[in-house]
Image (cartoon, rainbow, N blue to C red):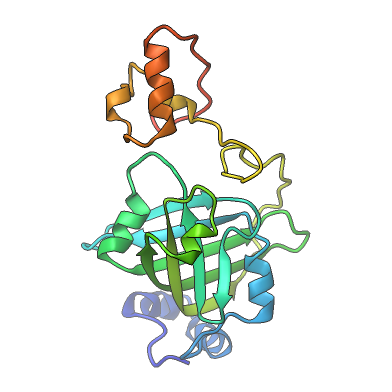
Length: 225
């Protein structure tokens, strides 16, 4: 296992609660110098339709976000490489802006629907790719993020609540249907058309509505009441 799987903060708490031996045993079982995505981990990742992404900026300020897609939207290219797409969002680029200045990343996959929940954590480094075959394989993605794992391990799932999927988001791009416009971008009072990206399909629709077209009820948005 790596020489230093834990830092002094973790060690202090392990000693306080007498879990150092347990933590060391866990590290022996789960942490290796050259982590690889095995068949079981690959099958798990490729059936997931969501992942929680942790990043930090150049000063170490953390950010956590949810990324969703169709099952398998996070792809395993080989034993040492993952890739996931970035779709149109709120334009902030909090997560991937962090990656541009600090490549450290933490992915958490959780299967909420399984009778026996499973959690998988992937720590590693990330890099953004704006073109190439990987990007072409994702419909309407702006870019893809290539991730090289430095640590892969399962974590205790006993506090994971079991849930049932109602439906997947209709805003996830799919080749067989047009992607709906995000309704919050059509609120001309809060989001005037001229602040939208020039290539954003919402811009033309927002301008049409501003010209007297019939409005549509908002669905969701980044600006709560």
